[in-house]
Length: 474
Ligand SMILES: Cc1cc2nc3c(=O)[nH]c(=O)nc-3n(C[C@H](O)[C@H](O)[C@H](O)COP(=O)(O)OP(=O)(O)OC[C@H]3O[C@@H](n4cnc5c(N)ncnc54)[C@H](O)[C@@H]3O)c2cc1C
Image (cartoon, rainbow, N blue to C red; front, side, top):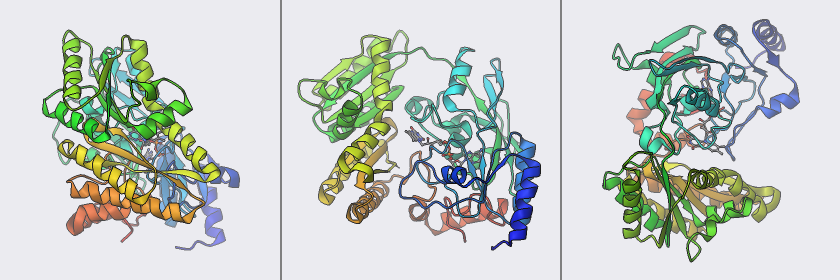
């Protein structure tokens, strides 16, 4: 809907009466997009930074009165364009609502505002001898609000579960500005529909989350870490299947391929790509929690890796060495960005895919991805939370060269089609956003899509909450 200059002036005046508003063009530009490449982004009318639920409610009421779309944002580390602004929208940056309101050690829960950075919450609860396990690779910058809204996963989720497993209760500002409190503070509770869960992974399309109650666990001491070197990526995939099938419960099971190993080594030399007597084609990183069984558990993982074809296995000798292996894994993203620049200069870019398949189909998924990449003649690195069947094929393109961009997009689509054909899903953890909207429709089918539209319209009748993300506007 077009707005007159007088309307726009009124909107800005009413917003300014309610909260902190920015309209400086340079600042607006900086809030246009998240970390996903190749997704459309518009220029917002304004960026607002509320500091309380009451301010968020007032903002939403102004937007509802003038029918102006709202785009909630956390730290904009998202990889699906879900936090991208659209032209004329109000961007609601939640980063100023960053207080840890309560850590209740007795009941093992914490109450936080959405702008709290994930690693800060983990560190704060650790001081009480507890842990908040979800650990996305971006945890030093991503926010809990963003994590809840994307249902983020991470490295330890193979054992401890993804963000949704920890969300007990939420406070949400609905599309008309009303404040909903849903969920609970108890370990159990089945009163009514599980409304809180509906907002987990909704990518800001159903409301703006203003408070989150998360469950905590007892802290686990660092255990033992294993690196296993494989002659093929598919053999590493087969090892993952064998480990899961055998009923082992590693606290980490990550796959890193040759492309990533070389990129990490070039970014920060750590000796990873020279692990073993021959350069590894793939590396599995596995960990088990501490305890009397840890040496047996890690030996069992090493045995299963060897049986699946690992040429060498290596157990970190101390916590420092284990931390170094983990740090190398966390460098994968900047290292691949550097690789793209070294290949294509300023045009170097990454299309980051995210697909999850049943663990029994992991080796097939990897072999198929390698075939797709070879046939297209384009570099695709494979990394992922393999224990969850969750792979991130990373496609390296030159954004200035339409041919590589086209090929990259085709490869991206082929990988998702392969994932679905193997009984998988088009996103394991990064979400749908703009990037995978059409693929979500394929995965859901007409009935599933209709149910999604019905839920959206029931909670947001004028489609003002992050419109066009996840599902297309009807
Ligand atoms: C280097 C790197 C590594 C990564 N590793 C992982 C990983 O291991 N696992 C993983 O799952 N993801 C990973 N990601 C993706 C990303 O970090 C996650 O999706 C994260 O949860 C996004 O958090 P954010 O605060 O940046 O949210 P944003 O990107 O700002 O927003 C994400 C979505 O949440 C919505 N949103 C944000 N705050 C609110 C709120 N308060 N209320 C309602 N909606 C809201 C936005 O509208 C958007 O739809 C990685 C990203 C990078 C760059």
